[in-house]
Length: 260
Image (cartoon, rainbow, N blue to C red):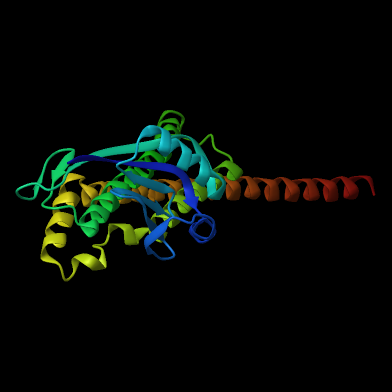
């Protein structure tokens, strides 16, 4: 049987605790970070606190209905969600993974949950990569101006906002680092572990995560340079203000002595 997995990054985060109290479907697995529901025979929903919702064997109408249901529990809901699609062929002769599909023996719920988890990790990485790319574009813009003019055109307040966006993104990734670790279920199950590793390679999860980390490292190096340049500019201006004040004071004393 061929079934489809659809995963959506719909917001910055989802209030898992409150949603769990409101949604009364059969909860197969749940903790403070994720909720896995059996909603019908052969149909599942996976909800993650980092703003991702994943569906298995759901049609577009029911997906839209559920998304409308969960939106009130979202923080910073996106106008346009990111989406990842993957296909599963169950009850195959052997396990076999392709570019955007996988064949599995049987239809074990833990295997299905593991596949949905990896697809959700992939769409989360798409979101983090998109945010990192935007910050890199902003960094390159200021670097090009620095190269062309020899000075920055960014104010102290805007630099603080820029640093804040970078730190917020780094904190979100650090908060959700667990999504890139092997699930506990794979530690003692050789079949699950192999499927997890194969999916990890298929989605390039580790490589994409390293690229994000490298991008954030470049951004950090640049904003530290920008901060130092602004501090130097501020210090330079302050020195001139002090020099001017001293000159005014000396001139004032000189004038007083002349006319006294």
